[in-house]
Image (cartoon, rainbow, N blue to C red):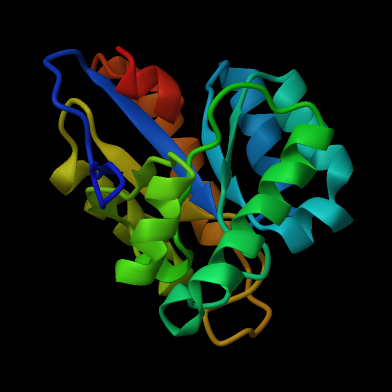
Length: 211
């Protein structure tokens, strides 16, 4: 029996397909703006959402589902899992899964750990729940970057078929301060226009894994 879950940082493929992923939302302003962009450009993304934000923004979760985006589990409270017991970690994941199921999410619900941090206790929980742990190979660092051109450059510099890009759509920084995601939104507007010209297609995480 395997003791560790499957970690996915990128997907090995020769097809020019990539995944846009967003952490920490949904947010009433920034997520709405992103969804409007994606609807206009017919782009599908994967949102790793927190349970607390699901509860306060159910209408956005329903919109994501209706418009064909994928929903992933980003814990309930977005607290660092390194300092939590296996029981607490399991509760955080199952509580968030339950909220997503109640709103109509079907199929596998993949997991991304808060802050991308995970240790043995959380690994055992993920394996017991048969969760894939979705990481990334393009860290945009948009959570602390005010300039969209820097975010865009980080994406272009690392981009390759099968890449997973991580961005953020919450209104909070890592220290809990309110912040603006205008740089992220501007960067997204650029890449959804430019990357298809370079032959790339945007896929959800499950589509990318199953290509």
